[in-house]
Image 1 (spheres, rainbow, N blue to C red):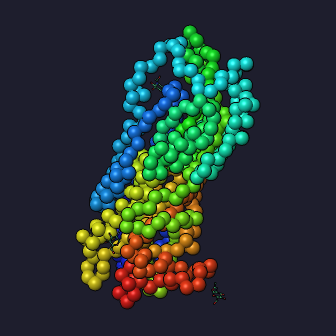
Image 2 (cartoon, rainbow, N blue to C red):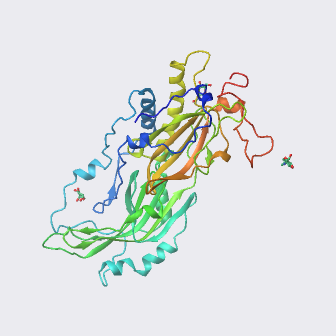
Length: 405
Ligand SMILES: *[C@@H]1O[C@H](CO)[C@@H](O)[C@H](O)[C@H]1NC(C)=O
Ligand SMILES: *[C@@H]1O[C@H](CO)[C@@H](O)[C@H](O)[C@H]1NC(C)=O
Ligand SMILES: *[C@@H]1O[C@H](CO)[C@@H](O)[C@H](O)[C@H]1NC(C)=O
């Protein structure tokens, strides 16, 4: 279904009540589900292709000018490292890399590994790196979610080393990391050696979206025919920093949820212009998504001005774009960008998520970016209980100033 995207604020005058900005799923439905990545267990370093930020801008600009079709099928990118995939497979019962951590060989069983006290201690005594907050601790499973950014093995269980690996990706693209002990085979399991001696790898995986207890679901599985991979001491950490500033916009304003704005309280005009959705298969990371949203907002303003409505109506300007991660049952799907012709205060951020059948779609990492030129003239509208005294009560007519509507 084609979402209504360019809506004149003046046409909306006829509406009896403002449209609530419930999460709309048209674009989500028109987009294939993003890939859920499980880090491989058979390589020591996994290099993935990481998109430059400019890729997200190009995707966003294309999404706005291409109004004839909102359902452009996504091509699945080849994210797995090409080099790793071309590596020859290890021959049956052939040697695999030594583990990076201490082996648990007495006894050498998955159960002994899962409850090995030094691993549990390392996990529970681990320091939380500066700039991060713990997401989960001591899980017997690693994270699997969208926006996989590769991993490496460490020779020490130290979240600070893992944080450094995450922060090496500039532009804040690494949003989270997962460090854990993994029980791996010492030689490639095969019929001649179904359940070889184990080694331990300490793995540090980075992600472009936040991790949660609910994404720590990979318990390892079996390397056929009979070797049990196991994971223990799995700790996840999320970056605390807000997303980057974007050119031409004010600094991101943190929101507790998505904005659900009424009409402008003074002029009673609608300010909601519609939304864009970008799957993590397209924009890859949270930061890539934020950049796509602000680019789409600017591109929408330019597009509207090239296709103006009949006079005296004026083309809508996207003066505020609210960005958030949209997750289905806690699995991040993509970035939703809601556009407004006037800017709203945090007090209107009241949409935390909603049920759709049995699935809960939640809003997280919500931020508002406001056109800096606009923000220099007008405050964020605040006209509900709890607004600070002297708040801007509205009345600038879709961003064109008082008296123009
Ligand atoms: C690792 O496992 C994957 C999936 O089972 C396989 O496609 C790949 O060839 C393996 N890589 C190596 C280096 O053995
Ligand atoms: C801010 O709004 C003006 C129109 O008032 C527009 O020309 C400009 O492109 C907008 N800036 C951004 C960064 O969207
Ligand atoms: C805000 O206004 C209310 C009512 O006029 C007044 O009681 C209160 O002291 C004001 N608060 C501040 C911080 O000025």
